[in-house]
Image (tube, rainbow, N blue to C red):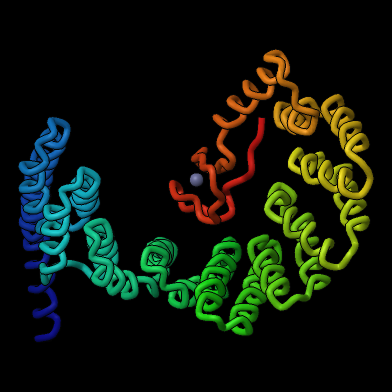
Length: 388
Ligand SMILES: [Zn+2]
């Protein structure tokens, strides 16, 4: 009986209370939503004000706004980092560093954004030339998969600047083994650099071992083959040197000119100039490389006669007309005192001298001496011999 009455009372109260509670809850939700919208509206106004400052090149005012915004909504951190990048690009490194250090110092910085801020700060240090600090930070974030590639590239550029080839090899190999095969060519150059450094300390055996490791890293490393040939020549092992030099044709035929003089030297020392001639002729037929012409001319003149060399050159000029070949021909012809005969070679020489000997296929940088790393874009093996 009592139970019946209790249930009945509860049900009756429920009938009146439920709509009331729903009404109160409705008001509460609406007020909250309104407050949130108001907050978002204020946020948007501030945000656009900040952008406006940016567009008007008033970065300092924009910075004040974005720094305040980031505290209330960390999702706006991208804008602060973009601002930091602008400071860095403009050379205002101190401002960029201050901004990134400020962000890092905040206890409320979510863990997921920490890597992005550290990466930006590391780039600031790199540009400021504080290589040790930059190296420490990049090493801290390189393990974070989201930043591995960028941090690794920056670390490699630091070690290249410091010429610390052991560290450069370590960092390149560590992430190469995780499937980054594009690093192979660069790693091979690091081994070559280290090999040359060790060779300068008269440790020929270790230098050879390092050059072989360069070839293991990248079987198409022309530099490693030429280095190994140089070491073999030093040991008087000319046949071995020839084997390395003949690899260049397979590795990169555009870089053949770098190996030609050494090839002739090795064949000469093994009393096999005829073999040199037939090998270079086969290369000429296959690759039409213009730089073979003067080397072949000298060989034909030495083995046969000057007339044969002249005939070969005349044929070459007809077959592949170029100022380079024509100049080789004119130099071989008997000099004449008449102005007509000396004018042409002088003009051609002047024109060909203006042409840089090497040009970077990546950025167009030109140079008159060969280097393995482009001084402009820092690509490896990108300087190719040029001729008109
Ligand atoms: Zn370049």
